[in-house]
Length: 168
Image 1: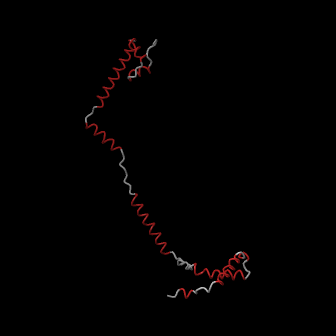
Image 2 (image 1 turned 90 degrees about the horizontal axis):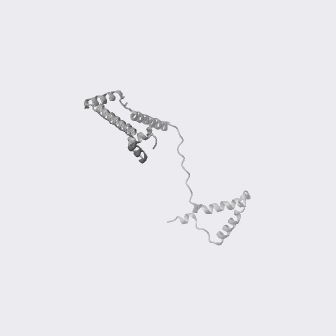
Image 3 (image 1 turned 135 degrees about the horizontal axis):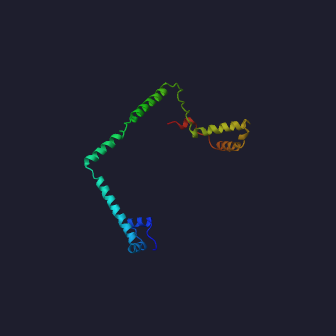
């Protein structure tokens, strides 16, 4: 190496990161070695001074802690939960009273659904009457079904009436 160490290389030497080229230069150059030794001495002196200044009695640190604590504002106690609880209770009461005082119509009861098996025969009779009345042209294709049902019911004996089926 033809030149002396620059600032970056000197810092690397102080940090303990020495490349082989820099190590050989330090072995050969007395000026760079003395500069390194002077900087190491300075760092040791600064470390010792900092350690000496930081050594304080426990009373000092307690006083520091009290002073810092006095500057910090105490946390405010928040009473949000009771406010929200009362607001929720009031809202529930208002809604409950509104429902109680609201005039309304009585609920509609749905009409009972007839049993499909009992109404099949009546449905077929209604369809046949509609087809015979020539009132509903869209139902003309169902006329074939009605005729087939009429023929099968005439071939079989009379159907059992509703009253005889329910006798016990």
